[in-house]
Image (cartoon, rainbow, N blue to C red; front, side):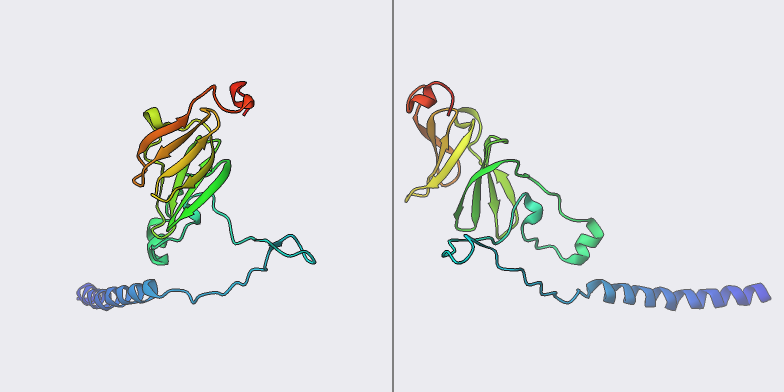
Length: 184
């Protein structure tokens, strides 16, 4: 008789406890931390008394540094997002709309970061005949075409607005004397 009463009591306690635990988990899981205001010191170059021309705003080394649309709770459950396309030796950058194009001479490619969505990818036309060997500079023309100066090929590679390879200007062995000797 005593064991039957203990079993009934245990069942009654389990049901409300489970319900209470579920409600508390939901309530604490959805609550976010209050925003913390961290004022960074203003970093300018050159230093006063000269007129400053450059202001340091931040750094970017992979997709982990981009804004994430995931909540803190989902990051707690699933972990932080995977850092894709890390930069090794960036040499030049171009911002066009929400896309940031970065020439990386160690990766020998152009990495594209979308600052709004937080996604990244390698330039779509960077394969086959449009393969970049050593990117040195990047620009965009009035028609939205990307122009990538490739020091190793001695050419300017042209990619369309959809990032597909179109054609190249120049060729290896032509151009400045340093390019012909392979020192550029």
